[in-house]
Each structure stands twice: as structure tokens, then as C-alpha cells.
Length: 202
Image (cartoon, rainbow, N blue to C red):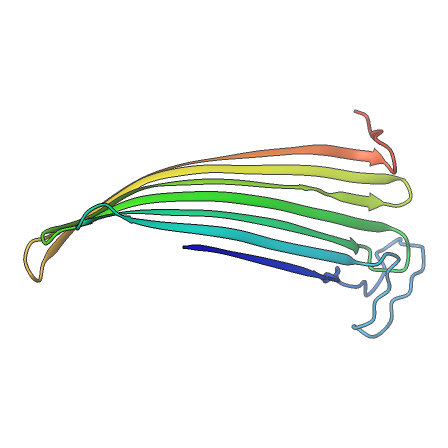
């Protein structure tokens, strides 16, 4: 069995809540319409979201009582939005936030059914990577560029056996071992706008 899906969604993302009143000591006037449905921005918001994946399932009959199953899956996501984070007509701050993600999983199981005992054993593997090079621009001088990467690797061994003691009573035993590792790497800094020069070198 093979299957897959693809979806792309473009449009204007929901922006930050509009300001109702200025912060204390904020001396630059801005326009805040009385209607909650009216907003002012200096930059046009945009967004995209692409999701896709594929799955392959294989079932192999080894003999009259034993079956081998394989389930392989891959998924990918590409999400990005750009918004005027100050939500006014003033050129104060914007955010450009991408998020790229992909993951792979593999499961193998073997199942045997007999009149007295039914058992299953298997292995599961998972690998995931996620990253996003965010740019937060604070006009007119600096740009904050955090760049976070996260990876996950996981594996598991598992088994289950069901023994029939009688027509009405069965005994079940289950075992599972899982190992998971996560790595997080966060780099970047505060730069002078339009350059690769750190605003605060120290």
C-alpha cells in the first residue's frame, strides 16, 4: 500500500493584537481606530504553509501463522510568516519567521498466531529535524537573528505475547524498551540592520 498527501495554504496570517493605547513614555503618536476590526500596519503581512508526506505499508505472509509487516513514513513541512509586530502605521518592528521540518519513521513487526499463543515483536525508528532562521527587525538600526535547530532520534524494541489458559482466561505479557535523544542548537545575535556586523560585539 502506497499513499501520500500534499497541501499548500497561502494567505495573510493572523497578526498580533492591535494596540489599544500607547505604552507609558511612548511619545510618537500613532493611529488606533476605535473599531476592533480596523488595524494600521506599515508592512504587508504574508504567510505560506506547505505540508506533504508519503507512506508505504508492506505485508508479507511468511507461512500459515506468521506475518511480517513494514510501515515506512516521511513527512515534510515548510511554514513561514511575515508580520508587522507593532501593529501600527509606524515603521517600528517586523518579524520574519520560517519553520522547516522533516521527519522519517520506520516500523517493522512480526506476528505469529497459533491456537495457544499469539505474539508480536517489533522495532521502531524515528528521526526528526526542525529549524527556523528568524529575523526580527527593530527599525531603524538593528536586526535580531536567532537561528534555532532541533533534532530528535528515537528507537524502540517491543514485544507482546498472549497465552490462552482456557476458553475464557488468557495471560498477557508486554515488554518495551525506548531510547530517545534530542539536540538543540541556538545561534545568532543582534546585528546592525543590513549588515553582518554585531551591534554588540561582546
